[in-house]
Length: 158
Image 1 (tube, rainbow, N blue to C red):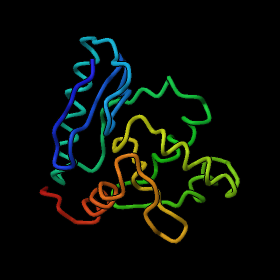
Image 2: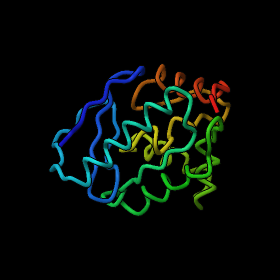
Image 3: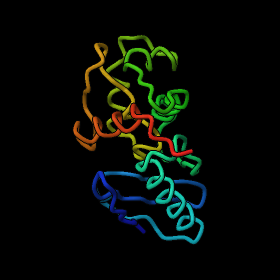
């Protein structure tokens, strides 16, 4: 079952398997997932964490993610985002080399980012062009800028 979650950056669509979040997107999926009790708990956790993140009080997501439906190559690129923390960015070329690909594979990395099924939690918004420019984002460049600006601001309430 797809859950819609209204946020300050617009409507988000979420789904989860029994082991982790499988969708956090800006458009509804073509085929909704089958609901499960465990998946519902994971989606509820994701919604709570998203709200805290967008309020500036959460810097690191703990909700489990399930990327098992992706190819190994796609997972490898998305997994390469793990060390890119709050307020940091990485270029497509640097991300390519960090996962063992040549810089010339930057476009492949861009393709993997464009098909990231779990936006924000798997932080593809932190990937920028070689000159630091904002390029491509499934949620639109305005949302990407909003997320990067949120992370650039030191709004932690701790």
